[in-house]
Length: 229
Ligand code: SF4
Image (cartoon, protein in one colour):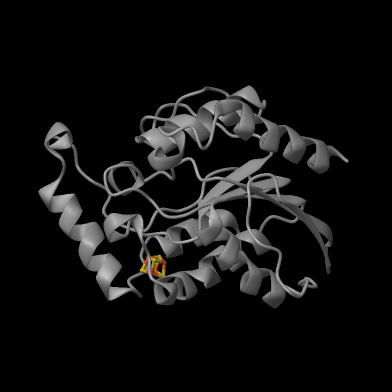
């Protein structure tokens, strides 16, 4: 099975009643500035090629970002940050991501979210995180060259451990705490895999200066070094 099949299947998932209700309600009520647009209103698949050596895992789509455009991190301020940084790192062909048909192409990186449906207040529950983790597991399993996972925020960091344990990676005990710049290398059936922590590109981090462009660039530079190594 390939990523296109996975993307198609995840797009039809209705496993979480609260999130299904929210994503579809937002798609009808809309934000005034997007009232003429047809919202996606479904789970948002990952983006990027199957030969990627780097994965970037975020939290969940934004109600008026990915839930509107149907492409991960596309059409909101978080996406402005991550795609500009991927472009600076040589992993994207353009620094912006405004719509699904804008010509964006990623190289050597697959971008996905731990939870695929937009949650109220950007806050999925632990049950929703666990319900969605099989999608993340399948996606990572379909990246045979994967060497590095850049994890944006503590939610994704928590979501990844059971996924990686299930995939056969040896998980340290206690589990390493999340932090910006934290680096953990695991051994597993497909060789080493390094997790790199980064503060999430959400506005509460980027507006306040908790996450700066140089901080994000440093993490992605390290990711490309590890992927090439
Ligand atoms: Fe399905 Fe994940 Fe959306 Fe829940 S959050 S409905 S598991 S795609």
